[in-house]
Picture 1 (cartoon, rainbow, N blue to C red):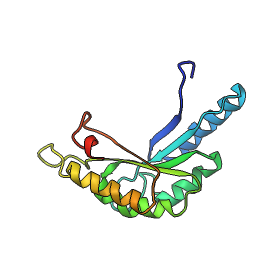
Picture 2: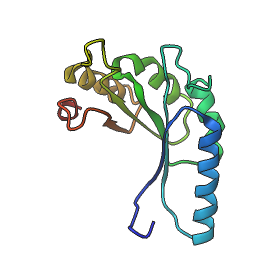
Picture 3: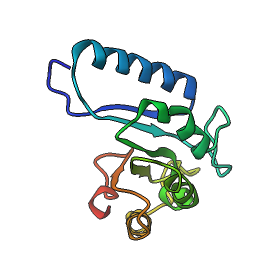
Length: 151
């Protein structure tokens, strides 16, 4: 914090209990220091079931952490942008704050490459924004990546 952090982010969450512990510690620290720094929270859905590794849907994940009053909540990692579309839409309908998504190019295929193209990611980001589902977008993995220039 002494270095001048602008945002505190608890991310790539697949276990809500760990996230709640982190959010509790952040809350205690901010209260103790009197600092007012925005907190972002980002969950990770691990497969097409739309659930975290611990079994929660994106909506249940949000309900579990909303007491911390994050400035922004969203999803990241694991699924490529194309597969995240329905889950981003559903989560966007229940959040009471800003929402973000930072997807990746999907999981590596059998050859170690990525099937999702930069154009796929850009198309999905356009869907997210045009529908008003998100306020911020980013990208993960294989950085620097041709995917970033299109998003």
